[in-house]
Image (tube, rainbow, N blue to C red; front, side, top):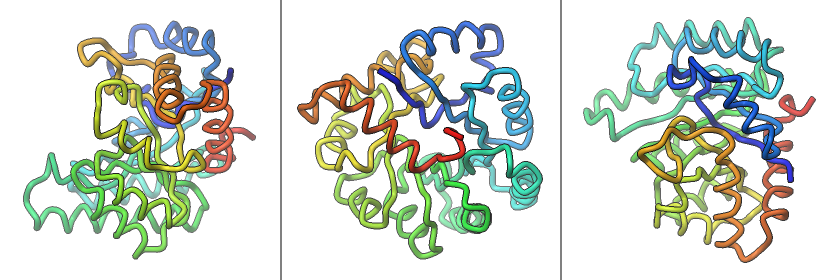
Length: 253
């Protein structure tokens, strides 16, 4: 089986000491591509350097929605334009109403996300989207702004809300934490396979919250989705990898 990890934080300090070994373990179980998302300009720069050294890493650039700084967003947008030929996605970007409680600051998040939707559409780069405690707001905002190529990663909202994203043609990626999350299990049961991808969100959202997560655990997500859907892991691996190819064509070029 071959797998694709649609969302991981490989520039995290958690991987600073043993990233080559982490990637080797992922390769050993069939992980052929990993979208490495960034939350700052500095991470975006580091991810490009990592991708140069490690071909399975597929680089993305974004800004965490908890960073309420339009100037920082402009710097990341400029970076995306400058390196558009090397990036496979814009991300991680989005809305976060869990870490940011002030509704006035939500408007700043929306202003920043709007910048990334615009560059995504102009460059035809998919958006890798964070929507913590803001699923309905995020999907509505993306639809209003005409976002066309969207992955909602580790979606924490209701299945009915997610289906509004499915209607818009958006994809959803499932992390290994699905094995311990009733919400994620319900999401998998209700969403069509044609819109599902696998992710790890390494180093977090692993099957055991006390242990560092890593890309090899995409197999855990695959097994769980297979059980919930009543099909073989081989079929889940095939379909989710093909879905990744549709959403992230540059990662397969």
